[in-house]
Amino acid sequence: MIAAAAFVAASNGGAAGAAAPNGEPIDGIRCDAMEGSVLHIHQHVAILDHGKAVAIPPDVGRPLIAGCLYWIHTHTPDGIIHIESPNFKSFTLGELFDVWGEPLTRAGVAGAKLKKGERIAVWVDGRPFTGDPRKIDLTNHLDVTIEVGPPYAKPTPFTAWNGN
Image (cartoon, rainbow, N blue to C red; front, side, top):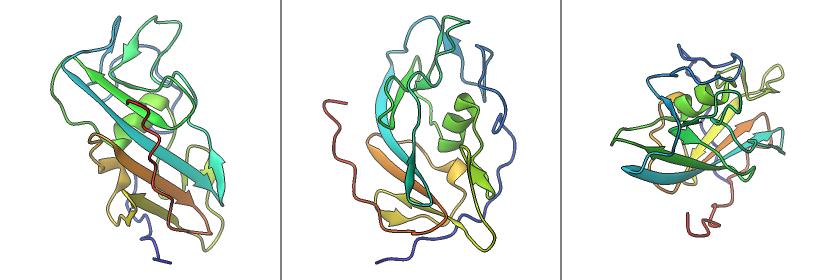
C-alpha cells in the first residue's frame, strides 16, 4: 500500500465553512438561469471520514430560492461534479467546496474532523497529492479522494462515468 501524503496546507479565503450560497457570485463564479455551454466537463470527488463515505449531496450549487445554477455543481449524490460554464475558465476543488458552503481545511473536510494525531490524505487519479487540495485544477474526468483520518488506503479508481 502506498502511503498518501498529508494535507498540510490551510484554507485561505473563499466561503469555506460558510452557509451555502444563495445565488450571489462565489469566487467569481456566477449563478445563472441556465447551464453554460462553452465548457462542459465532469470530475469525481469522494470523501472518507475514517473509512466511511461522506455524501456530496445532489444539487450542490443549485440554490432553489434563487432559481439559478452555479457553473460548478452536482445533480446527483454520486460524487460526480459538473462544470458547465459560459466561458473557458479553470476551476478548482476549493471553488467547489466554496459553492457547496463546506470547509476544506487542514482540520476537517465537509463535516469530517480529525482526531488528535491524525491527518488528511488526498489522492488525485490514484496518486498521493502533497499540495493544497483547494488548488487542485478540476480537469475532465479527474478523480479526487480525500481521506480524513485512517485507514489511508489507496482508493479504487472511479470508472462509472456513464457518458459524463
